[in-house]
Length: 140
Image (cartoon, rainbow, N blue to C red; front, side, top):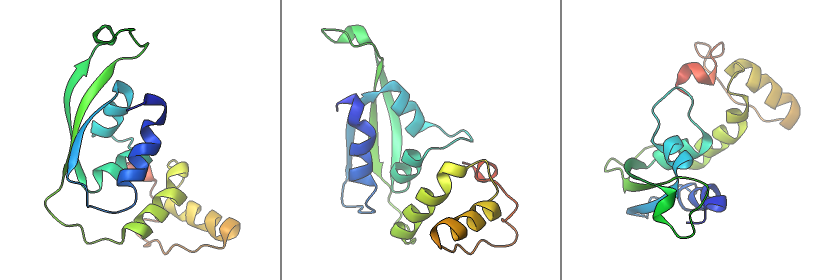
């Protein structure tokens, strides 16, 4: 997969909420593989849309010298397997939430919701127990 368009391709395939794809094996830039396979606090938009319906398995690091001519980056082989459990969530609404909130992961949910209401006239009902939390604190 061309590395400069990896994210847009993965967003297109896995970000539409269709769980029609069985999965597959992909060679991607190691940096992208690390983002998709991470389980640390900072998760990206791409992590959420791919991991929503698929398990991501890091298979192998592929050194630059394995190619001719050698690229300037290290590659990785990853496998995506569709999760067996169907998810009962409105994926379109989930994507909308990610698009609205992910850029502001360090702000509190309440502050983001207030800002979005002013800027976009879009209202998100955030439970009172979560209004003071940041996305980072919720595993982002």
